[in-house]
Length: 340
View 1 (cartoon, rainbow, N blue to C red):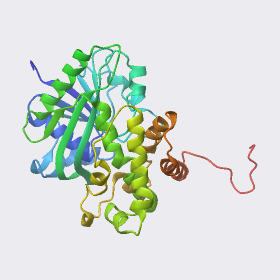
View 2: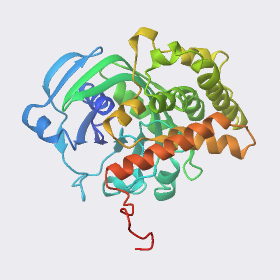
View 3: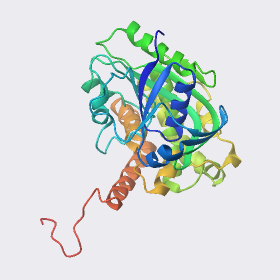
View 4: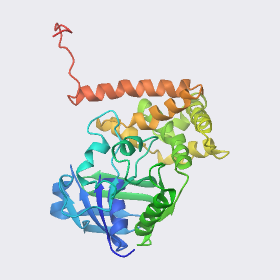
């Protein structure tokens, strides 16, 4: 590495802030963070971070903090790192959002996001740019504006999405470079993971099943396991469908993956997964990439997926309600004609 990488970070909540911190403390990157709701607080007083990896930090900021993605950056960003939720059914899309910062054929795009097929719109819009997959296993959340509670170790798997227009060697080299820069501070576990599909399907056993079931029922991960036969009749069948869909696409997940994902959170932690938290806050949910995409992949290959179909249709109805509450959908008023 001959110089510090210039990195634009889009999404500085619980995951994004720890991402920025790891990139900065290693001395191999300068991070420009795009902030929205917490911008004023960070400008005034910085982030307050309580971290199991980094200890307690006050008044911390990345190299630069901005409100919006630079329209015409004075310098080309080496990497654009996206850690926002992926709300595929809401505009602007990730591909459109980051356009001002992407130099065609140069900027490496890093998607530290959950779900399946999230790279497809990026590869269509930026066919000559390398796009990297980031699978984050971390317990970190923003409990108040600019207050980050990082309670579970940061583990990040980085690999390159398939792109027939760019050589495997070049894509892997970019992934390894990012891993090295992210790991330089010695406070995290970041590794090169070339089998992108395996890691994405493995996390979906949790995120396409337990996450939405908690969001729909309002129960946390502990209470799901305590609530009569919910695991046997709803959670386990959904996970079996995801495992079968993965296998149909050529990805064989490890034996015991279902039991591991059911019990991965200590029961008495009573964890509220991110989708449940979003529902409680009235936020839009990333159900298309987490549930819709694995459902479509399995169904296209003849895998019976009745449980995931139910979850997907229910989440789609919930999303419609939240869009109406946010004024994103207008419905006819009482007595008003549908043709008006």
